Image (tube, rainbow, N blue to C red):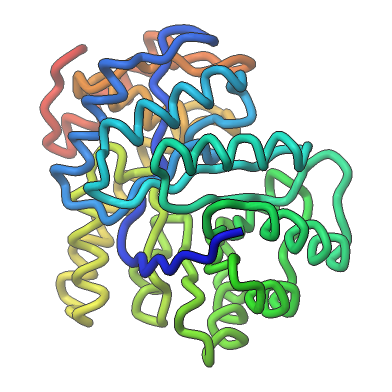
Length: 308
C-alpha cells in the first residue's frame, strides 16, 4: 500500500469505452475522444466505470484500455481506473496494472451478486485498500450493486490512509447531504457526484466535483457549470443547468431501455464523428429510428453532425 496525496477537484468524465466489437477497442476513436475531452478543460478522467461498460468487457480489453488511455493522456490529467469486480484478486491485479501504466487512483463499487452487509463492506474495503498500490475512491452505485454505503460506513473507511474519497451515483440528495455533513471535518476526503443534473447544486454545497457522463460529448459545458458553481455565479449556473437538463430530458430518454443513457452518449459521439457507437453485449447500439431521433436532438442543440 502506498498512500499518495491526490487533490482532485472538478469535472472527471466517466469515459465511454469505444469498441469495434465485443473484444476489440476502437483505438483511434479512444484517442480522439480523449483529446476531445481534454480540449474541453476536464480535470481528470475515469475509465472502466458504469458509463465505460466495465462489467461487460473482457479482462483483455480492460487491460488494453488502461494502457492506451494512460499512454495517450501522458500525465496531462489524473487517470482514475475502475477496479470493481466480484473477485478481490482480480481487482488487485487490475490495480497493479493501472499503477504500472501510470494511473493516479482507483475506483471501486462494492462486489455485486451477493449483497454485503455494512460490516462486511468495512472489512472488504480495509483488506482491499491495504493491498492497493494507489489511492482509492469508493463508488456508491446502489441501483447496480444492490447495496449502499451507509454514511457511518463511509466515515469509518475514510480513516484508512489509502481511501481518499467517494463518488455517489445514488441520485439521492438527502443521502449526499448526509455524506457532506458527516464528513464536514474531513475536507481532504473528496465527495464527487455522478448525476450531472445534481452537479451544480452539490458543488455549491461542498462537493469536490462531478463525474458526469455528458462530459464525454460536451466537456466544456460541464467544466463551465462547475466553474460557475464554485464562483457562486447563480445566473450562469441557471443558464448552463438549463442546457444540461435539455440534454438529460431528451438525449438520455430515447427508447425504453435501462441502457438508454449509455446508448444516447455513444450514438451522439458517433454522430459527432468522434468514435464508434458499438455497445458491448448484451446491449446493442441505437437502430436507425433511434439514431435519427438522437441526430434531431443534437441538431436542436446546435451540435455539428459529422457522421449522420
